Length: 129
Image 1 (cartoon, one colour):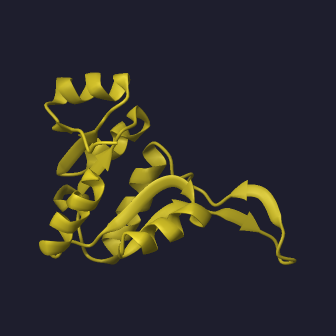
Image 2 (image 1 turned 90 degrees about the vertical axis):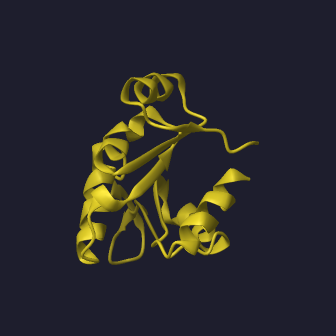
């Protein structure tokens, strides 16, 4: 429930709303539509000329530090800076992305992320079930 509230708060401020996820476009697209987000950045599978999946993903992988690469390219394309962005996460694999933005927010974190958030004084929130 808290995710929808956070999205609406950002929408009211006029922020660009982008889902940045390790998921594939096959899951990201419907979530983006459901939440009426502006865009999504995710992992995409390589498809050959015959329309078949090759088993590879387009690099860099949208995971860990790779998320920062995806987000930086996206922000640059809009003349924006990651330092002016917010990012929400529950996973310690997202520490590089949380460190890259001006407003990191930790949501119901895994134990490693909770520890990192406490060390860095990042806000920790609970969005409910």
